Amino acid sequence: MPQKQISVADLERVQEKAIDEYFWHNFFNEDVRLCSLCGNSGVIDTRNTAVSGGGINAGRLNYCICPNGRAMREEGADMEAYMRIHKDVAAFLNQNGVI
Image: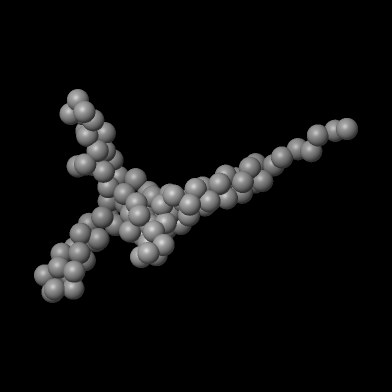
């Protein structure tokens, strides 16, 4: 019996489903309904926090595996620009007693 060929699109759908299930099972915080990795920002910045035991900085700016991060990656979002805006908004909200 001949084997059915699996298309690249089929493999990509299976991969996306696996990532979805992994995210929802491991990183979605049900209590606050947010991604526990990025807070639904879609970006994880470990440039100043991911340091090895030997003092080597291994951090970088990454898209998150949450739906927002994957959408940003697919659209080619500029993470550096996003982080600048995010910091400005956070500073404004903090100055005005919102956070």
